[in-house]
Length: 113
Image (tube, rainbow, N blue to C red; front, side):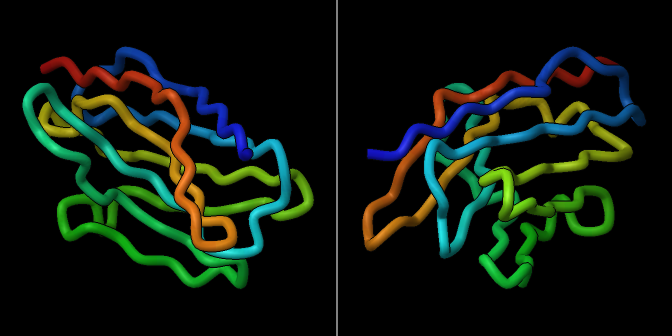
């Protein structure tokens, strides 16, 4: 079992920034990522990052969000800049370990106009 703990969510105004973090209870030698979900919708990809640091972003966040990871600390980060009202969602950390997917409990991000 892998536990993922997210932190860093909160309330911010349009144009502001937040930095999310997610720490895994064990080393994840593969891809980790961030997803988000709004009420009534499925999970949407935000960004992913491989162990080697290769990144992938949803079109909606390209140029505004930056995903990074600290492998020594089993942690990934999501720097969110120029936040928009439509970024409001619950953000979840995801990890792929040995073919199984693990999810954190989520952290809420609210962007007010």
